[in-house]
Length: 403
Image (tube, rainbow, N blue to C red; front, side, top):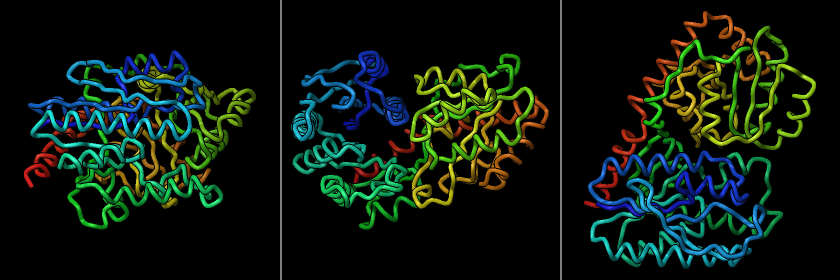
C-alpha cells in the first residue's frame, strides 16, 4: 500500500529555511504532529509515503507573490510542494488546482494507494477529496481540531464577517465527506462522523527519536524551573497560572513561559517587574525540547470547562512526557485514564487550586519528582511513540482499502 499524505507539513530543513526567510512565523505543533506521523508510516509500510504539501505561509508574513512547485527527498519521505500565487482568492484557487493535479498524477501511478488528508486547510483538503472521487481512491480525514469547536473560535462571531461565515459553514459541511477518519478523541466522532464511517482514535504520538536523549537530575537548571510552552492565551489558563505562581512566590523557583497569543504582551510587561516570571516568546521546537529536559517541572493549565476541550488532545502532553520531565496538567477529558499514573493532576482549576497543587508537588523530594518524569518518558516511548501509533493507523488504512 502507498499513502498520499496531504497537509501543510514541510520537512524540517524546509521549515527552517522558511523561518529564516521570514515566510513562516507560526507555531510548529501541527508541523511536528504530521511529520512524526508520516515518519512512523514509513516505518510500517512496504510502499511509499508521498507528502503533498502546501507551504505554510501567507500574505501577512511575506509579500512574495509566486511560490513555484518544488520537491525534495527527506529520508524515506518524498515531499511535493504545491505552487501558488500568494494573493487572496488566487492563493486558494491555485493551491487547489496544483494540489489536485499532483494527487491525481500519483493516484494513477499507484494501483494500491490511499489518500490521507489534514482536514483543516480547505484548499488542499477539497483537492484531496476531488482527486479521490475522480480516481476512486479512499480519502481519510485526519481531524486534529473540529472546525467551529476549537479554541480559535472561542469568543468569535463569524456571522459579522460574511467570508468567515461562508468558510466556517463550508468547513463544517465538508468534514462530513471523507471515507474514514483519524480522530484525537472519541468525542470528535459525534460531530464529524454522523454517517458512521470507519474511524480510529489515536490521541497523539511521541517522537521515538527521544529514546536517545538523556534527562539527568544533575543537569537541571538552577534555580528550579516550572515551564510552559504553547499558546500564550488567557483561554488556556496562562494568566491564572502566573497569578497562582505569584501567590506562592517560592524560593529558588522560577516560572518560564514560551509561545505567543493574546496574553503575550501583558505577560512580557509583567516579566519585567516580576523577577521570578520569565517570558521567552516563540522559540524553535528543538530549543523548547532542550529547555523541557532541563526544567524541573512542566505544566499545562488548560481549563476543562470549555466545550472545545473534549474535542482536543494537546500534542504538548506527550511532548512533555517524552522529555522525561514530569508534567502537571488539568484532567483533560480527551486524555485517556491510562495517562493519570504518569502525570500530576491539578486538584482544582482556580488560582488557589493551581497554587495548592504547585506547592504540593514542589515540596516533594527531587528524586521522587524526577522518577515520575522518567516513568512518564518510558510509558510515552513504549506505548505512544510515532512508529507504534502509525502502526495502528496503518492497520486501519489496510482495512479501509480491503473494504
